[in-house]
Image (cartoon, rainbow, N blue to C red; front, side):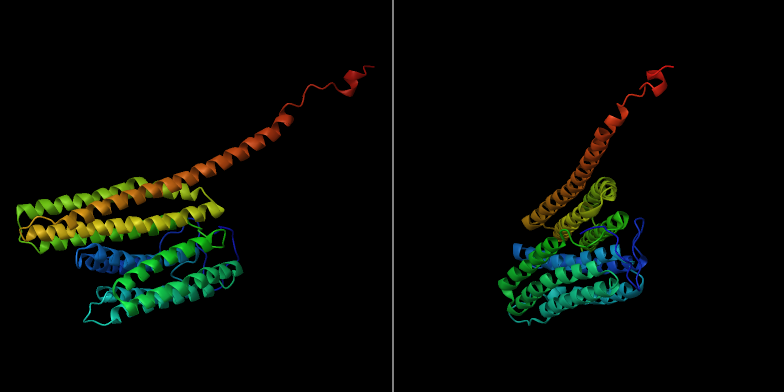
Length: 380
């Protein structure tokens, strides 16, 4: 990826460095509130490792759909031209994907309709995303080649894994879907290095990633509220709900008061491949941040439901809570470190350039300024 300037695409508008998210992007992100809620319910169904891994596989698929459109909107203004049409279509498809989530893992007496709808819907969404990129970037040959390279290598194996898994069901489906998530992550990262992807606006990048964290935190509030509302009102439930909310507030504070602003400042000082590589790593780490929040949401909501029935929270609730907090804190720390390390690397390069310029200037400054004139050397 580079941040080199390419010719402006016809029918679309380039994002400026100070650009922020548009109302259409905010609307697009809101669809993921429903999607995240569905993922949390899917993980709670069974309360075991398999249900959690199944939910994380679905979250991974959803994440790549969100991330691809967030990066698209950082290159082309989202509410204009073909990008706007593409996001309209994407909103509808993501809603369908979310509706299908409760039935993506069929039982013996059920069919594969939910899984197939989810798999085919994601493939369709990827094709629409590819087409929008090609149309919006038709004045940018380098970007079009990058899109074809990345999506051409990524889409075929991912589609094969998702559809095959949907048809097979059971453990094979879980393994294939987790494989699809991994394939997409690896191929996108590998094909993007030194390519033509751009990140014109660090502010837009930070805002979009912050918004998706807010959505995940919102899901944690929904889980806490639902868990508490299903129980008879009592001091125990109120205290437990307030304690749960304090955990969500703590995650908000860690990310928004410490991590996000610093990362935005650091990324804004970078350029070229260093900027896009750092931002790409940040997008990957945000999958861990969001997954951690949803695991915390799962643990808190389930614990409150158990308290409401007069029972102590089960080990699964505590494990989900602990694993979620660990994943969240690890991913946020890695995000902060990746941006800080990239900033240090940029500072070192700048220091070396300044030192080189200083060394070149030394002979000029040490040239004697009191050299006798011709008249002084040959007095009359």
